[in-house]
Image (cartoon, rainbow, N blue to C red):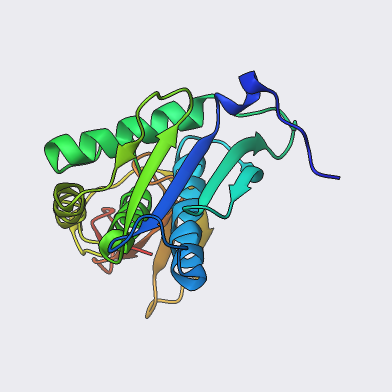
Length: 213
């Protein structure tokens, strides 16, 4: 049985509204709407994860006219509504739109997910309402431009660098002299292990070649 959400519950929700560009009164193409909704939920899930929350998205409302989808973030472990996500996600999108950069606290994969969502608005008009917002946020050409700038400003997904790195040991291979490497978890990317390979044969110093895995 579907869960019934109160008015206060829905203040923690997020709403996606999709309309055709040529005629806002026409029905929305189902495939386009589902593609946008999928990208939207993917970006929300990535943002929640980067905020340290494991949530599922429950539908509070789904309307045929103008294709309206409202979802509520619910913590998987406790079943409690995650009230911080709507406001936090909106702030991130707003900062991207204003500055062309995402906050440093947001993971690169989350920024890329948001850009994929915003780019989906090329074929229709799209607005997003977060929580108790009186005015939904429209995805404009400027929003799309700024989102691309934010992705372009991200560090490369993979790089090699010599130097010293510290972290918690995650994986250690055999001490085969032809393949000496280990993996670390480091604070700047706790969800991604860093592969380190010893450069000097004597192993006297931990000077490494580092590649993000």
